Length: 245
Picture 1 (tube, one colour):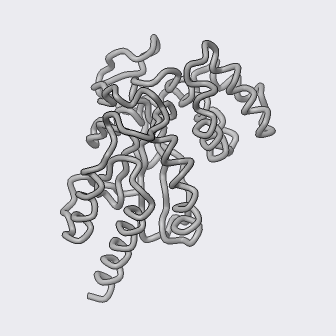
Picture 2 (cartoon, rainbow, N blue to C red):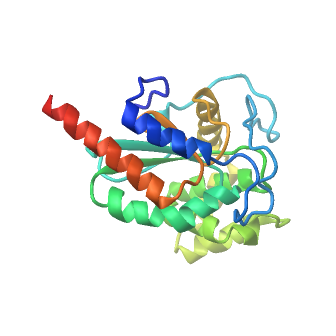
């Protein structure tokens, strides 16, 4: 996916995105359901050293094309990249209340290809552990259902002393090979992907979660479905108009 955050802005779409940014997340807000969004979601300059969330040199092992998990057809006209933190209440809200409709109406219809990049802000309990768990499940091609479980049951694991014991239950619930999952964690096979996702997001200007690039245009926050539909409809119109020029 080509996503250039510095690309020129097309006025109709830019106006809609400005509306979205005005109500974007990053601070507290009613109805978030997480209880800790009043804390900053600023992204550290570098993180995910072997010891945890420590400073790292600005190096990325993986390009954005190699990161994340794609949904939808490769030839879809609109490309969206999402950076979300499994511990973020606004991300949970987006994936439980908004994304299912977007998936049905825009992804499954062939209009949008969606890339979810596993992102860790370092601000939420067990967010890093959830990212590793989801990535390891991704090795067995079941990232999407694991992602949904993690968001739907966020309150079950978020403040738990041993989140990995809960995640193993999800792995078994999905009918996956537990030993393969456990070896993935033990060998840190997905750490470089998670680290690269964080550094890529920081390079692209991610400062709050969820953050999106809609064909390169930034959108921040768990925007209402009507805003998403307006943005995507406007983008489709722009693409159709440009194809007729």
